[in-house]
Image (tube, rainbow, N blue to C red; front, side):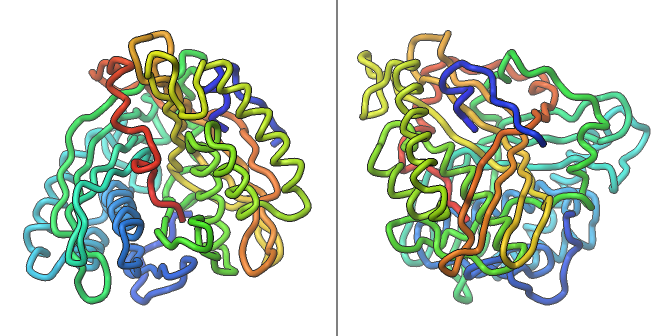
Length: 397
């Protein structure tokens, strides 16, 4: 999926409903439940803190949160630490008010049913962690606008610093602040879509991604629930793992990941194809097994899921479409290799095998491209070094 960005080749083509807030928990995969639209139930680990920071940021940028005051206040009451709810509600209401003009597009007023408000997490760096709390800095991309009118939804990039405390056997939100951050230019080969093309990702048609931070044997995601939420989570993980820079530079990691996440029937062929792809990327970008070029520049590849929707689902097999933002390039002095972002739809096919969802195919589909960030100039290539490396990889589902 990120091959086109890492190699400079165009993406391959392939043939081709946010749920309302809930008053009671329901299952969303291993360890994760949803309460009033908020994923809860994280492991008491660094990965769990990364997952909580990512999910809370996605929820806070969602259409329901930004357009429905009652839903927003319920969500804040679930996320916020004790004693912080009052301040958190005021901050959330202020942020929602500021977002409304972007969600309107060029319409006279906001149509809550046609809002496009999605957030994807490209990197997550733990600034501090102990048994009582954590601070996580996220690099995110947002898409906001409307699926009606003439103004195409617009992309943006933000740095979000999330402070969490361990309370009531879960990670709770103490504070969150955001600033404009690294801006990656949209791949010049991707033209913006028209507004109606975004209709598959309005609130009723797609859900935000959910990650759990639960790590299983070998360091890869723990088994998923045998439900549609589990299948969605497995699809999100696949997109992120295939977009990790270690997929290209670390053969041992790549083989272990594919063995852990692929169905037995395809693991050999997928491994062979992936090895060929990785060699092509490394040759094209001039990087070695350490992920760096001879002058010390670093390969940067990340994939963030913006939204998910099922194409088909049964308890034996599922096909999930993702809307993704993939960043790829080299962080260094060569501006011609500056990381760029491509917005693609991905189809992840899965089967239920050995007590979890396993992938049989991860296939790029048609792009879905927002307008470039408004009034934001792309950053120099060497600015992206801080988001590379395994320690900055987001938590997976």
